[in-house]
Length: 332
Image 1 (cartoon, one colour):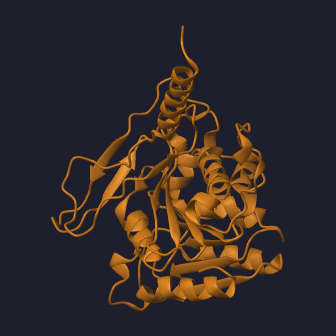
Image 2 (tube, helix red, strand yellow):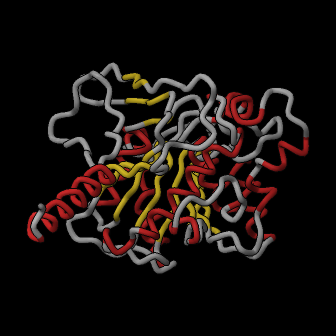
Image 3 (cartoon, helix red, strand yellow):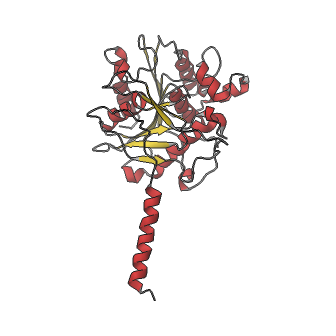
């Protein structure tokens, strides 16, 4: 016979085992190359979908990390074939109550790790923000959600951040979204289509709002209509022969409403990859809807400057400008 003490211990052990299994998360994308001395790699992650991402392709992609840097002292990694979308967490030493969901770019071909992910995450975390870098699924990999697949991950991520706000010292009404280039398109999509149903709810987190309290699309892909559209992002997202209706459905400026959050826009006027008119069109739509918008245009900067390629140029001021603006919106 099993006595009461043994039964209690067995129950506790089973519970701890279940909790450990639930806490097991997919590691951050890393790659085989060396890391930068003095910059510890993050280790904490949150898988978005406990039972696996919905709408798995018949032939699932295989995750791989490419190192693109030619400088041994500077990593420039990008991950492709994401099959387990997840957030990599950067906790501040002293939380200020605000959080940021960061969506790196990569032209919907891959998701950049360092330049538009970990670097801005470290910068924000040093200033008290709790930061979640999102590694979202890519629309060209054949997921059932098609062009909405990255938006599904962004919506789920925003809801999970709010659901776990107490665990991270976050105020649920102080969550920003920030995205770069194609990640800026995900950010703009989230800011304008946060309430669009793109997946079936799976738990209590999905009862929460996916609307960011502020959004910062940085040199963002926005329009899906030529000549403004970034051709590579457009083809991977909606296909080379998309109809005008499909183009409008996935152009954030066409979906702005008065419910869209205040936005912070940054672009360089000499950007030959994603024309500055993408941000100007977004600004005009926000203004027309009566949504607060702060816009910073820089003469020089090109595309993809992030933090590292803006150094020594006027564009290097953009993170401080964002932080100051965010404080006027009650964040930071």
